[in-house]
Length: 75
Image 1: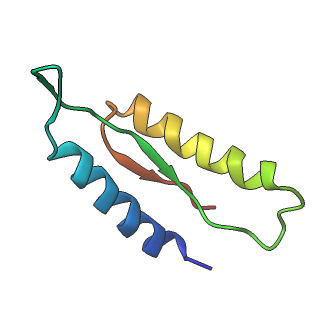
Image 2: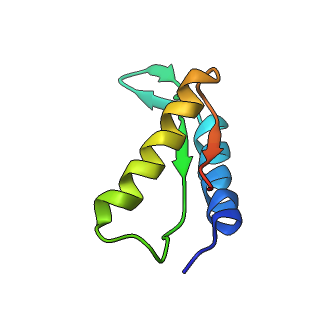
């Protein structure tokens, strides 16, 4: 299992790859912004939806904080 700190490192690498990339289609260059929510699997999780709910909370925190960032959810 990846702990949240490890998962956040991976998410930040993905974030930086996308942030620093320029894409081109039909001669038009463009870039993307990305917001990522990160959490870990909790031993009390009964269903996958428990994990998804926490990641979703972290994602919305990233959006509320200005978007284009990685946010970590931890209890």
